[in-house]
Image (cartoon, rainbow, N blue to C red; front, side):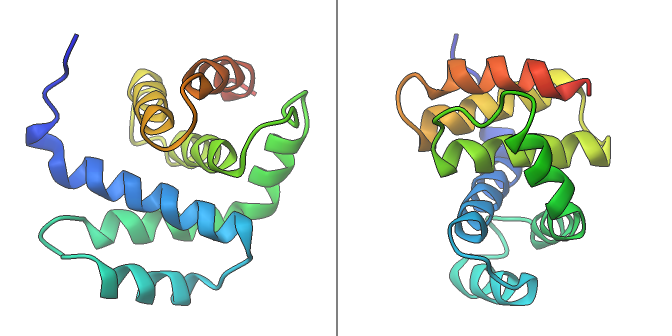
Length: 135
């Protein structure tokens, strides 16, 4: 089934930027302001929502220790890639903000895994999110 994401282009592109920013921060700790400057400079405000990007990154940095701890416990620290960790962190951010239904968060996480990670990562992410989502 092909989903029509055209009407959600800005949200889709913004979520991709969020994953890239989370990945960058997980690879090498980065300051929130520096990340915002970088993504503001590199992206067109007509193509992404800087408000959405900012709110998700602010939530991540305010709760980074708890998010990372949750991802690293409960059998979560299998051999997954940093990009998978970034995608799961994004899902936890959305869960914490309670603005999207669980199904949307899972669908978006799977889409992001298919775009950014290896070909079977979406299965791994779906299974791991099922374990941690309701904690």
